Amino acid sequence: MVKIGCVTIVFGPRIKDDMAEIYATIKKIGYDGVETGARYFNLDKLEYYRDLYSKLDLKLVALHVGGDFTNKDSVREQLNNIKNIIIFGRKLGCPYLNISGSYKEEKTREDYITEAESYKEIGKVCVDEGIVFCYHNHYWEFINNGEGMKILLDRIPIELMKLVPDVGWLEAAGVSALKFLKENISRIEALHFKDFKSTSVPREFTELGTGITPFKEIYEYIASLGRDWWINAEQDQTKLDPAEAARINYEYVKNLGR
Image (cartoon, rainbow, N blue to C red; front, side):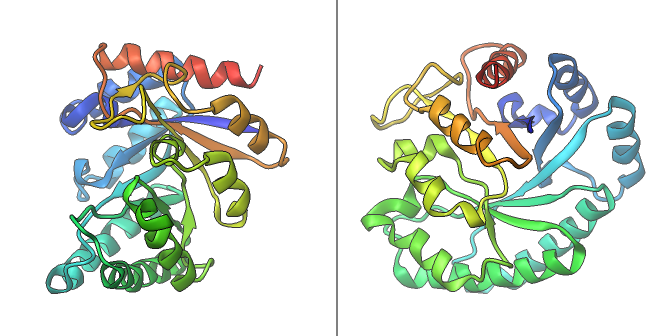
């Protein structure tokens, strides 16, 4: 069974101050859950968020975090902050912590190795707290024949890091999303559905089904596996009203299952 989540980045930074209103809109559209950046939460207001999700009957599917884990001088502080976020998420019944790898010009093999060591530490905390740690890709992990992604997968045990592939970024990087999913299915926990107008740089985000990503074959593949899946619709930017973009994206994913 597929459940559909909304990555709230489409609503921009106002999610911090207008979270209750935005979540109510997302629920009204029909979404089953939400994924929101951890930086938009006040970790001291646990009961407020718990009541909010309960009142709306909306699932916090994932907390999303970022950081520069190639910077050895700041890694320890970042890891301490993330540990607090993991505990916060566990108390809210959130199943996933999703992390975005950091972009760096001319990112080196050593940078990815440093990142991998940090992710192993995060993964261990997540295991202890009963949350699944997932890596969210962009395009840069697939530069140089995918060297970055290969390093992360080779150096981090599967029990410490799973994947939440962004199928739009895979296609934008010139990688077949379907092929990647099939090759790494044992690590895949959930999916991010994103679309781009083309592979041209700068890449232009667009509503699902209006760009380059072959969602139908991806959906049919995961649906054939006989397990429950979260598909989280993610659109970083839109020219439409964010609620309208979120509605279009929800309807598109919902109709894939018909």
